[in-house]
Length: 152
Ligand code: SF4
Image 1 (cartoon, rainbow, N blue to C red):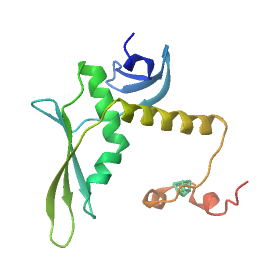
Image 2: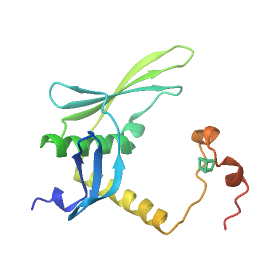
Image 3: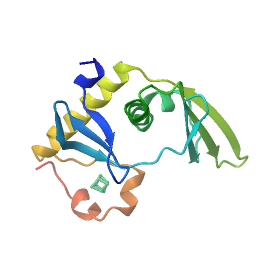
Image 4: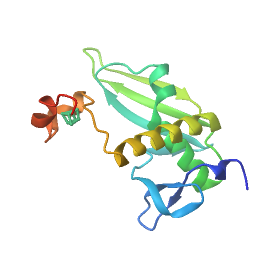
């Protein structure tokens, strides 16, 4: 068994979903992730197009879990890791600009990803929920009870 197979893995379902499953248990999904990789350039380069109001930087792409998941899914689906992960960011500032950032992932990135997924999943299974406030709150149907939440 290769080292990578000791970690949860993605596979393509008949609906082309990417499924992250627990090691040794290919039937029960650990978590299902549906997403579409924007573009795969020749030479195994994954390209993601973004639109942002603030310019993205190296840290953003190095820490992006989305890109780690894409890297992993690509490796599992095509049998080789992508050569690079590229983000093309259209910055909607007063002077709009287009910036390109590149990053890479390795097996330690996967270890971090699956550690995070496992901890979040454990929290959900134990019904540990707490507010995580951000721009996404503006459309949340739970904002009323969430704002009155006092930690119990
Ligand atoms: S308002 Fe909704 S999205 Fe925001 S922290 Fe509360 S539950 Fe989460």
